[in-house]
Image (cartoon, rainbow, N blue to C red; front, side, top):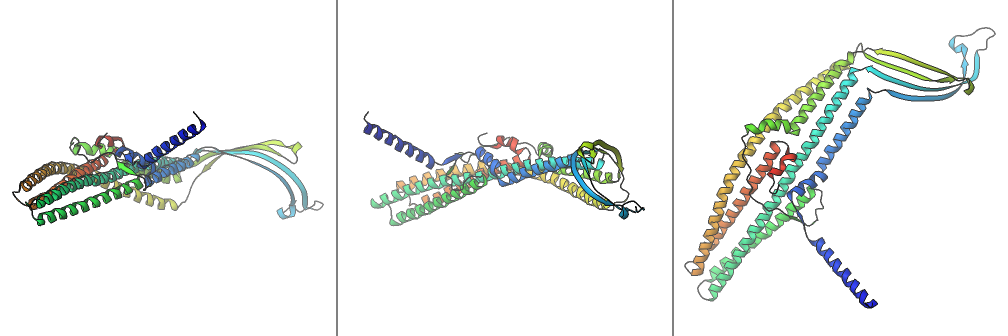
Length: 444
C-alpha cells in the first residue's frame, strides 16, 4: 500500500472510532433499581456521615481501653545548678551558704499500670456499646437510603409509564383527527368534528409534554441522590410493573422485626452503654490500685552514672465527690428517656408493619379494579371509533371515550405505584432491608 493510501486508511479509521465513541457517549445509561441502590449506598451523604461516626466511636473506645493498659515513657536530662543552703535553713559558721555550680545526669524509663480500676473498665465497656450503637445507626442509615432510592426510582417509573400512556393517546388522537378530516373531505363529517379532534390532539400533546418534563425531573432528583452528575444521560432500565409478593400476617413479622431493625437495636445498645456508665459512676468511690516504677542511671558525670530505680504500689480512695451524684442523676434521666424511646419505637414498628400490609392489600385490590377499568375503557374507545368511522354518530363519543381511557390509565399507574411503594415500605418496616430487599424488587 502506498504511503498516501495508508494515511487515508488510518484517518478513516480514526474518524470511525471517534464517531463510535461519540455515539456511545450520547447513549443514555440504562439504570436498574439495584444499581441505583448500590450507587446510593456508596455516595449518599447520610451513609458517609454515619460511617464516619462509627470510626469516631471506635477511636473513642480505643482511648478508653488505653486507660487499662500500661503507660511507658522515658526521660533524660542534664542538670547544672547552684543551691543556696541558707534558703533551706542551713546556715553554719565556716560552711558556705552557696554550693555549686555542680551537674548531674539522669536517664530514666518510667511505667505505670492500673491493677484495679473499675471506673475506667466500665467506661471502656460503655464505649463498646456506643460503637455497636453507631454501627447499627450506620446500618439504619443504609436501610433508610434504600427505601428513599427505591421511592425515587419508583417516581421515575411512574413518570415513564405516564409518558407511554400519553403517547398512545396522542397516536389515537392523531388517527382520530385524520379520520375526521378525511370524512369531512368526503362530506360525511362536519367541521365541528374536525375541530373537536384537533382540540383533543392538542390536549393530549400537552399532556405528553408535561409527562416528559416530569420524567426528566425525576431523573435529576434520582441522579443527585445516588451521587451521579445531575446532567448525566439516564434511562430507567425497568418499567413500572405489577409484581405481587406473598402476604404474611402481621403477627409473624413483628417479633423478627424487633430482632433485626437496626434503629430498635441501636436504642438497646445505647441503653446498655448507659447502664455501663452508671456502673462507672458508682465505681468512682471504689479503690483504685496501681503499680508504677522507674529505672535508669543517675550520676554527676557520665563516668559516675550508677543504676537506680523505684517500684511502688498505690491505692487511691475518693472520699468526697459531689459531682458523682449529679452525674448519677443525668444518667438515670437518660436511661428513662431511652426506655421511653424503645417502648414508643416498639409500637411504631408494629404500626408500620400493619400499615404497610393494609396498603399492600388495598393497592392489590386497586390494581385489579384499575386493570379492569382500563381494559373496559380501551374497549369503549374502540367501539366508539368504529361507530364514528361507520357514520353512526359524530366524534363526541370518541373524545369522551378518550378522556375515560386517560383516567383509567392514570388510575392503573397510581394503583401499581402504590402497590410497589407498599412493598418497599413493608421491606423497611420488617427489618433487614438491605439483606431482604431483593425479594421486593421487580428483577431480584
